[in-house]
Length: 223
Image 1 (cartoon, rainbow, N blue to C red):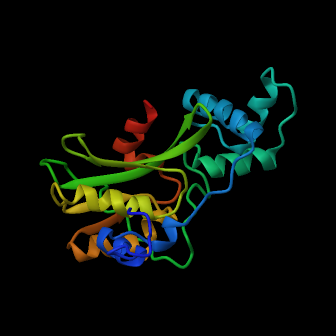
Image 2: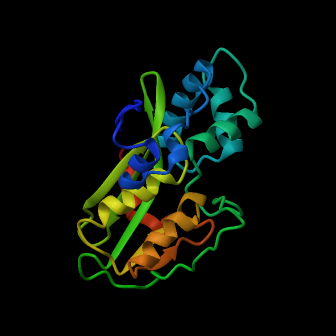
């Protein structure tokens, strides 16, 4: 972006239009995360990587079994795991948090044989810790070649960076079916609208079925 000056040829609004950016995201500044929460999130990330079946209750028990200098409450663990986008990898009654106002699409890939590139792409989001904070990574994978077609980083879980990642990927090809989970980033009209406009069939994991999107889960499992 060009810094706004009185004699600038393009206004900020026009620059956003040309770059297909949501203007609100330009001014968005996420609230800082408490350093103590970041330290605990790093521990949670380590434990979840080793034991991806841990839910909020089990994670709380495990953290309190570790040699930490304080007791950890379940409400805090739930809040941080939600912030990190972590969900236990096994069927539960509520493993996805879709926006109730968004349309959810059926899962179309059960029993489907994957025989060619660009037959099915899938996308997911994972949490990555940094030295002094964290970011979210989203990636799109081709189910046949297991090739990562596009990826993006963000410091917030808004749908903008998922939409931009999708547009990046569509520069290289177009799948017949696009599969995601039921997260609000993927059920938003901004995201599904791009798929509809490109004639792509939408598929979404069943609630509580982490293995429906297994190829992206495997990619992130080795992070």
